[in-house]
Image (cartoon, rainbow, N blue to C red):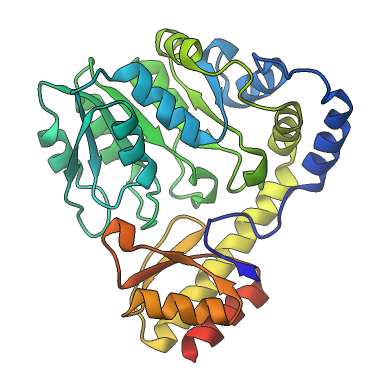
Length: 326
C-alpha cells in the first residue's frame, strides 16, 4: 500500500534518529525525563530561546489541546478559519467552548475577517501557516500585522507544522515574534519533515508565563524516552532535512504538472501535500484504494469533491497520477 494520506515524510525516519531511538530503548524500563531536559536544551540552542519557553507535547496536536485547556473556560470563544485543521474544532469542544469559523478567502485565511470576528468572549485564535488541508501560505508582513492586532488577553496559537517545507523566499522567524508578543504560542512538530510521526512529539514556544500554565496542565510523562532521543538526533541532522526539502519540492512540481496535464484543479501548496479537485471524492478515493494508494478524503472539511494527496517518492507520485488517469 502506498500511504499518502497523512502528510508523513516518504523517506521515513532519519537513520540518526533511528539509532538514537534504538539506543534509548536500553532505558525504557524507567520513566522518561518528565522535563525533556536534553531535548529542551537542543531546541533552546537551535531557536535561541531559554528552555523555560518550551512545552513538549505528544505531537503538536497535544500542544493545540493544551493551549485550549489553559486559555479557555466553558462558554468562551475561539476563532479560526474555514478549512482549518480539524483538531481546532476538537480542542474547542474538549474545552466546552464555542467556535466562530470565519469563511476562507481563496482556501486560505481571511485575516481581516478573522480580526473582525474576535469578540468580547474570544479567548483563543488558531491560525496555521501553511494551512492544512489546503496548503495556503500567508506572507510574513500581513501575518505579523494580524498577530499584533489581536488583543493582549486573547491567546494566539500559530500552527507551523509544515514550516520546514517553506521556500527560502517564504521563510520568516516567528520565534522573534514570540519575544514581542506574550499572548503568542508557536506550535511545531517532528511528525512531518523530521519523519517521526509514529513517535508522537511536538513542541510549543511561548513566553514563560504562558509556558508555565501549559506545563502545569501537561501530562507528566507525555513524551517517551525514545521519542526524546530521536528528536534530539533529528534536530541535528541538517543533511536529512535538506534532502527532505528538495525531495518535497520536486515531488510537488511532479504532482502539479501531472494534475495540470489531467485537467484537474489543485490548490497551490506550501506544504508536503496537494489538495486536488477530482469530482466525486468518495468514488475517486475508492478507485485509488483499489489501486493500492491511500489518500485523504476531505468531506469532513466541507470539500467532498477534493482529495488531499501527500507528496511521496517519485515512483509513488507517478503511481498516483497513473491511477487518476484511469
